[in-house]
Image 1 (cartoon, one colour):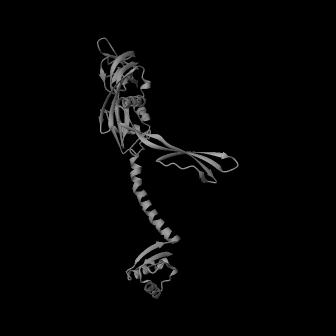
Image 2: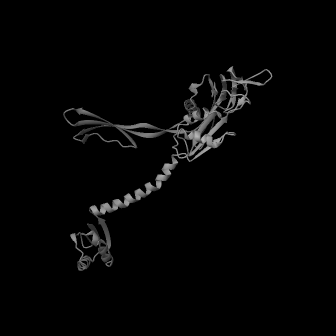
Image 3: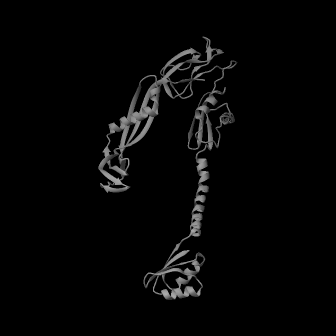
Amino acid sequence: MVKITVIGYNQLAVLSSLSRKNIAIKSLRRIDAKNMSFFVREKDNDKTQKTLRRFNCEITVEKFGIVSKVKSGLKRFGCLIGIVIAMVPFIHFSGRILKVEVTGNVRTDDKIVLSALGSVGIKVGSEKNVDLEKAVDTLVEMDEFVAASAKVSGCLLSVEVVESTVVEGKQEGDSVVSLYDCEITGVSVESGTALVKPGDRVPFGKTLIEGVEYSTAGEPLRAVKASGSVYGLVSFSYDTIKPIKYPRLKENKTSTLIYVFGKRIFGKQVSGKKVERTTSRLWSVFPLYAVRETSFVTEFVDVTADEAVAESVKEAITVLAIKHCSASYKVVTNYTEKQGYICINVQIQAEISVGGIR
């Protein structure tokens, strides 16, 4: 059914015209000389509205019943389905790797690297939350590489490899390579040949201890499994932004209310953006409850630069896992203040073990 409200002074003429057009009217209600309402069948709705427009009156249409609700629901459902269908490709591909980029491979073809990654389920179209550690382990287990790293940026998987060096006429032994860009502070060789000394600056992937032994004349004698410890100074950088004024909730008002059968009989409710309520039953055999309400307001607390820097240093130490360092570390901080914020850079220099054995 459709409810039609008519505002106009030609009520009798309107009703007469509708009757002549065989439009059945139900539940007619004449509110006053200017206002009336009635119901018509939904199939007569268009014809009724067309007739009423001839009398220059104002009309309001309300649809009732299951059919109208179903039609309206179907329209909304259709729009929702359309939005979902449009979003599916975006959601699907935004969470996947769309490109794999390989660098550092001079002698080894990209296809070999991609094939190795594919063997552990990492390829174009894979989800971004892939096991990068497993990918790196797979690559360094290959004879072609002594080190590798991998990271996901957006939908791009970047893979960097360090190829094995070849000793002519000899089978290459394992090497110790640098896991960081660093400055060497100490080298202890158990087997193989050290290629760096304290004070040298080396990039990621640089061979530190070569799996080859040489004669006094500098000629390669034999391949061995490189073994030893290499330490270096590694710099970690951490950037963050802190507000100069920090929002904090402050207790404002407190009130105790008494309820019986769900109706409040004592106390005044508090209001605010955040209200905490604690309810306790006063009588186990009777629905008598006490409710304690506490409202909070937001206040802004000034934060000094020293406080913001100290908090950032703690975050940096946690994020960069400096707790795993074998020696003490040095912290250098820089900050600038602009437009209500403090931009902070934390540089942490630590002496750690930088060598990795393939």
